[in-house]
Amino acid sequence: MKKKLLAVSTVLALALTLVLTGCGSSADNLVLNVYNWGEYISDGSEDSLDTVRAFEEWYEETYGTPVTVNYTTFASNEDMYNKISSGAVSYDVIIPSDYMISRMREEGMLQPLNFDNIPNYQYIEDTFRGLYYDPDNQYSVPYTYGIVGIIYDANVVDEADIGSWDLMWNEKYANKILQYNNSRDAFGTAMYKLGIDVNTT
Image (tube, rainbow, N blue to C red; front, side, top):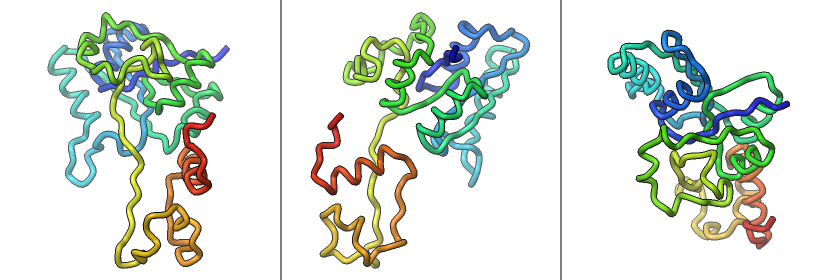
């Protein structure tokens, strides 16, 4: 039987509340295991805030109880899914993308949330509720959203080549193009190039 996970896209304070109420952590030995995308929160490098350490300090100062956050990152939804579905690891909180929430929900890998412990959920706009990947709002809370952008060097790419997905296959730029290493982006790029609706199932 697959271990069920708590998939919630939210801040660490909420995550700890969920762990305390749903995962049975003892009050004197709080541990929160979080699995998130790389570079989603600042880690203290380059003089940035170390979010995990700052949270641990804030929590102990506020509640008088120390907490340890074990924060691990992944590069793609598929990497995350494969690691978790193998049963070799267990996390309290994971931050997958929409389609992966749907897959994990359908496979029974997620625990429903107790929204009594998430009072700020009332401030989430209706636009972000009842979406296809969690139509009954049982397993996830929106954390962030965005798009994958395309960046190019205007000193290298000819202006005449811009404006078509053909650029990605132009021999002139062979071995000079980088793309996220995940199947969803790769298939999306190919579908745009071929004129196929990316919402095709």
